[in-house]
Amino acid sequence: MPTTETSKTLIPQNPLTSLYAVANIWERFVGTGELNHKHLRPVIADSWLRCRDLGINPLNNRARSVISEEEIEAKLHSENLGISGKNVLDRMSNTVKDTGHVIVLADNLGRIIYSVGHKQVRSHLDKINFRPGSEWSEKVVGPNGIGTPLAQGRPEVVMGSEHFCQGWQPWVCYGAPIHSPGNHSLLGCIDITGSANKISVEAMALAISITQSIESDLSVIQLKKREELRLIYHDIQMRFPNDASLLVDEYGYIIDVNSHASSMFNTSSSIINKSINILAPELTTTINECINNDEEREYETMGEEQSLIADMRLILKPIKTKKGALGCFIIIINKTSISISAHNLRSNEDELIKKTLQQTNGNISKAAKILDINRATIYRRRKNWLQ
Image (cartoon, one colour):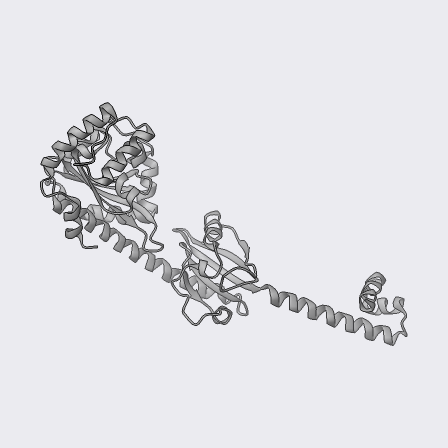
């Protein structure tokens, strides 16, 4: 992600002049409902219209708190986003402490869980509750440097009067979303906030750079988890030496396959690092349930499914440690093979009954006694032979 170029495209050449025009548009929109798009960026115009439809109060001057200090501490010390985000922000703390900016980390619901930066600015932001525990989702407080990047899935800046809520208009917010290195899902957001009188391309670039650092740190965590998973998988599959099996991480990506499983797939390309859904549609949901509930699950693929494994029964076993969920061990059983085996077993039993009846000259009672089975079983089997 080219940080400087991205920043330049988001921030106008004369931002303060532009914001005076936006302030007038905001007053008219709030007062009459009329929206002049001439000096308003499309992302902001669309957001204002959504705010009106949602009934958000444009005079709002304080966000609500939604999570406790205990919940925040748990996120910072046990969840990957919190651990990586706090590490990176702590490293940036001295860099921004005298710049007039505050950096915050939010989760994917727009809830702030950590902040560092200029002490006096943080004190001012506390008045609008822009601090850990508060919620800054766009659908709750309108466009801002947390909610808008999360809603758009890309970096965004919200400058001064572009905020729909009047309480946030003294500020400029530079936000960039954080994506999971595992499945690229949205994990959270980094926001840098400062005075709207000092709009900076460099601050936007810094927000994007911090996001990249967190995503890099998350990749390291994922790599360590995968190596731990592979060691556990090696031990587990030794207990199932004759079964086809594979290993997926917590995001449903295949990271190891044994030789029995490889021979079952009708494809020459490698399936390592690909989603388990290529083998069975929507299997990721079942894996998530298996891991989250910490219980074994079964999943059956159907013959008509467009998957690499049809007519299979999958046994899913969650893999967890004290640190949390790692992934899932999957045993693959061919239902067709089971049917063939059952058919062969039944055929062998029929042959044995026939031979025993020949030895007893057709005496069913004697044959049943020799075979230690019920006479009704022989009657039923013989009836099937005659059909």
